[in-house]
Length: 430
Image (cartoon, rainbow, N blue to C red; front, top):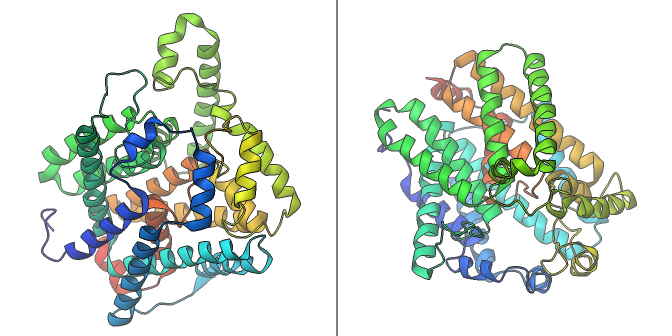
């Protein structure tokens, strides 16, 4: 392929999937609601858990149906479950589904499992149908439209005030959730620029613009995660062994932590502190904006069912949202997640489930690094850096495989290792 607009790209599928994810995660009027965020958030979370969103349900139904129909209609590649990784992948899904049996809220668990299986079937279809390069192009297309819609929404609603100190770019979604799409746009732009050199004059400015809006969102987790992910990429590109990379990362993390400690205590370094915290200097570094007290609360509940959990994504019942929110620093804002993907997963499927998932992440990362080293392919580099970014973001955000574009892309990348079709793999490496 010599340019991005390739006649074989299924643009109708890209457009349909983009619309689905916009309906699932975005709202044109979100930036107005963000101005009153926290006034009645706990009650809103309870209503959402009890009733759900009709638009979201319809979008998921069409999304899953579209994937099933296409999988049945196009039988060009066989699905083979072979090897340790494939069995581990299947066992994780079976374990999540089995959690319905011991879930605290069976109805909530069933609803969440249905969403998980819709994402799984759709990820299987994307993994079979598209190469990694096409998936990157899809990401560029979708996330660019999300950003454009967000900018237009804020300008149209007169909420776009980038020069105000308290401003955070929302666009059409929560700043934390929107920053994940912005990060994907940064990564897809940069890696497509390495593939299509003739398009660099378009792609590099797009990467710069998306990174600028990532900074405007003032989401420190995504900002730090994308920086660290590219550091991992540069280290792996220049070094041959994992041990050297791990050692350097540990040393850098220790020095960075020490530097934050010194900056936070030095009043003369207020400017540097503001830069590091993206202008959110009032938030405490050490309690991580209230996360640690929430984690302590959640860890107590993990001890109740340490190995099996409370059911996949079924821990946050209306009663728990209200009770934990009442005891939280964010009582008015509401607490409906652990603000840590690994803790949330442990609450749902126990230490067994989270252990399997971490092993899957590590194995996926290692496999894609191996493929990158073997083929020197930007596509495989994008794959392992995306998994690295996802693993880091999960430390401070509740992201999972069945929510948002990031989770869906990670699901696809895992599924591509889970599927076995040599003819497709040969095409991707050419």
